[in-house]
Amino acid sequence: MNIKHLHTDQYYWLTIVLWISVLVSCSGAGREFYGESIQKPGSGNYLTGFPYRDAGLYLETMMKSVKRITSTSYYTTYFFSNEDRIRIEDISSSDQLDVLSRGQTETTSSKAGSAIIIHNRNNKIALITTAHTITSPDTLYEYYSSDSIYLQSISVRSNQVNWLYDAQFMGIFEVLAIDPIADLAVIGTGIDDLELQDSMKKDFPVIPYPLGNSENLRSGAFVYLLGYPRGYQTVTSGIVSQPNRDRYGSFVTDVLFNPGFSGGLFVAIDGGIPAFEWIGIARSASVSRAWVLKPDEEKATKQASQFPYEDEIYAVQESYIDYGITHAISTQRISSFLRQYRIVLINNGYNLDFWNP
Image (cartoon, rainbow, N blue to C red):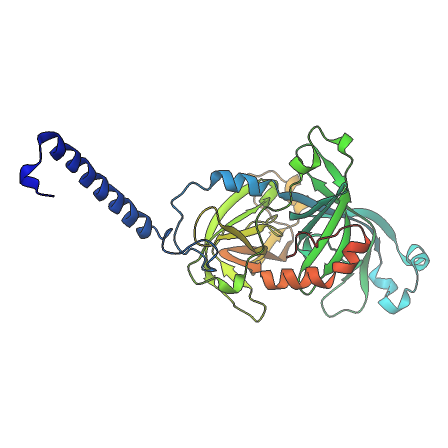
């Protein structure tokens, strides 16, 4: 085309086309700058940059598959006198506890965490969570001193109640499979549609994204964590700082961890939104411990705050979360655990073959 012989209206349209070409090329450059079009979804390379596209709708959908759970253990505590010199071997049955103890009381111990829905069929819901969230010791022993062999008290667990919380539902769940070493457990419950205003499929949707491969995570990979720290429905984000830290492919992130996040859902973005993948379960945070001098609480509360405390003080060991160091269970561990207990789950009416992790 000879530009010298173009009419005015032809110059106008040529200018429009040139501007569109410039805008398209600039837009493409911007997308590549933010890292979203450099790789295609499903490439197995998780994004290491903050996604520029809105992820809110997808995260809201994922959050429906994450539920809050609690586990409460009930104990009967038996107290002994130091003069009686009671040892563990002196007690062979619960009847002897009643005879030998100087008194008893009832106590409870509660834990809270998060769980991810992996099954919703035939009015049965199955979720996966961390084992430590739903377990507690059968018996607790307390001695008069660290070097003493004589018991001060024994606490025996008499009952344990596990609760699954939802906006319209609160019910008891049972432990279907558990591996304390992997720190994983599958819990389940049956729900009658009549108990809910909406359908079970809507209130308890199975996690909609596939189980990815945490071995493909790199340092700097961007992740989201969904769960219920302190009982609050929470979505937060972080960066993977230590991928493949052991032979199981576990990893560490700088996500801010609080009690209740255990069992929470870790997701990463495989190439670009909406290619989310489930890449782990929140397990724990690093903890520092320190000895702190404290007054006797009962005596301290009885004294007026304006007077100095002059009674006994005690050395108490307290734990403090090292925020920004959160440990995750890998997808390799999750897949292996579910395959190991596949038959057990099927026999209890929870067939995960359709999901195929």
